[in-house]
Length: 469
Ligand code: ADP
Image (cartoon, rainbow, N blue to C red; front, side, top):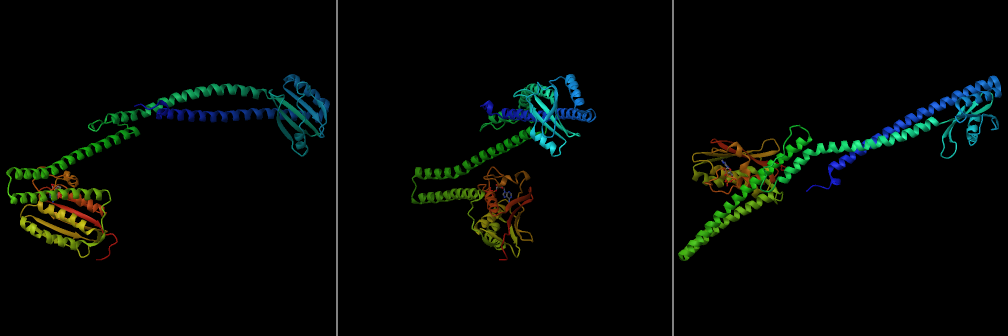
């Protein structure tokens, strides 16, 4: 399903791109406008000042008549609609002017005259000749002879610049908006093309087909990284799905066998119509098989709860050395039966905070395995290491068949058994349970092994805040 165009990332990126570009261009234009208008205004002010200084000089040499003549000449030269002048006494009374027909609306600014009287040499004003018409820049200048000169200059150049600027601004902005939108669309489409490939691959993946992969460009950019991460995620999911399938097969197999046995026995007993003894034997076999099934199901529940952090462990101070000695005593007869030598070395102080029943279960699983996978005349020895670190370690060594490195992690998975023929008794849950218990205590169970040389399973548990027990 394609998303609505207006909701697409490409569309929103284009909007952002065009927006940012337009705003930046506006800022640049405004900056340019102020720079140019300031320069033009400075230029006009400078012209007015030059003119005022000229008038002042003529006034001091030739008097008012000379200034008037100069003004008339200048006004003619520049055009009477370009500039004007007035000469006033400090009380504001006008005593000489240029031809003022065009400038009659411009009065004498009282505030400006007052400023001059209070000491300011030049006062500039911008006034509008009549509403909507051009602007005029006016200078009030105090000349040496106690005369105030008011002179004005039309701001035609300024208005021309403003009109031209407006035109250029509108056209340029239209071009900028259009171009930036096009560029934005093109760039966002190009940048997001890799995302499209991921989406396309994701849509091809279904529960049964996890083979599709996103093509990796090798550009080492974000999209290549996204593709690689996505593919790695797919690999992990494919692995997990395969594991789940294998686990379901194993569960089905492990549940099916005892149930088939129970059913078979019941059927034979019924068909043969045996005596009371035959029925009693069937009942006891059924109980035995059911216990095995219940045990398996309970173990699965314990693992699930411990994995989910809801193990409900009852922590109390436990001395692991005592626990190991008791376990050795318990397994002594089994080891003897199997012709395997069982020994243990313990440390003086091996206190941890733990659920004693659970740690016992964890330890017995490891010892049981060590004895199970070690042939006669082999050796199993257990060490408790409670060195100066924050951990107590129990190592269960054996001289058994060993484990391939590739299986180091797999043997801790539910129902995983290295020997698929299941020649030894067991459901493949022992190590998984042992690890879940150790992890539930903040520790772990790990393995190192030499194929056909023996294995060493290690339980590490944190000492926690247990003092000497
Ligand atoms: P099982 O009930 O099959 O013993 P576990 O979870 O206890 O299940 O062990 C998983 C597998 O790990 C076993 O099937 C076995 O192949 C392997 N394994 C466990 N302990 C040992 C050991 N001490 N030596 C060799 N292989 C072992």
